Image 1 (tube, rainbow, N blue to C red):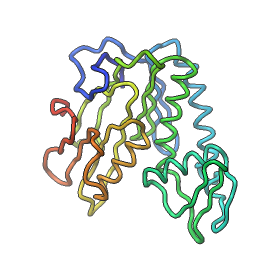
Image 2 (cartoon, rainbow, N blue to C red; image 1 turned 180 degrees about the vertical axis):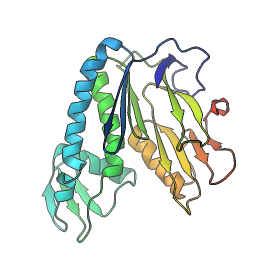
Image 3 (tube, helix red, strand yellow; image 1 turned 135 degrees about the vertical axis):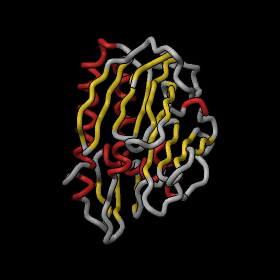
Image 4 (cartoon, one colour; image 1 turned 90 degrees about the horizontal axis):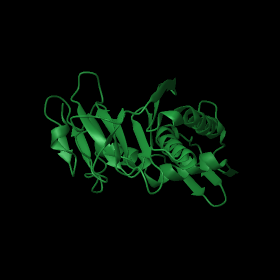
Amino acid sequence: MSAQAVDPGSLTPPGPALELHGPAYEWALWGTTVRLVTADPAALRSAKRLVDDVLAHVELAAGPHGEADRLPSGRWVTTSATLTALVAAGLERGLVGGLEVVVDQRLVRVAPGATLDVGVVARAWGADRCAEVVATQLDVACLVSIGGDIATAGPDGSGAELGWEVLVQHADGGPAALVAVPTGLALATAAGVDGDPWSAATVVAPDAVAARGLATGLVRGRVRDADGWPARLVPPGPGAPVLVGDWPEGAEL
């Protein structure tokens, strides 16, 4: 994933020449790959420290044997700020269920007999939060990818013209596209299972949690559109991807 100049606010195929190549760190976490890219090479090391700190808090809240796994069911429990934010984001986008939440008081109640699974929303929320923290504290445009959840952010008043080249491909050998995502937008890809109407759905949205929720709803057939945001739907079996909204036709490889 690299950076390039694009028309702000639009999703486009990448240009013929990429002049701003962001340096990157890449490492394994949570059974997937985390990738961090900064527009300024000098900011990468500091950005990595900030990302590590954010993801450590997400791990404590949502990782194996973490806070979410230890929540008792059937009663109100005071939770950490990170877990409360994860639950609230997941509820808003239909990524968790069986809960009641009072965000202001950091109280969560798991339905009797139910368990809390915030694994799906944790990656998307983590990408969003990491990008926000890096952009705010270091005044630099950045991209954070955790598996299929990609968030970008830049400092206020600058960097909006900077886009990020992203390869979209849900499986090796499957149909692929290359798009330039403007700074400030996010992208998520959800894979389908047997019986789903689509084998994969990719959505560009204001944040990774929103993109993940829309992509999951599309691939499962729970929603029919992406709320006006660009989307790419891969059918099961042979057939060209279906492009929704402003997803660029010239992006297919």
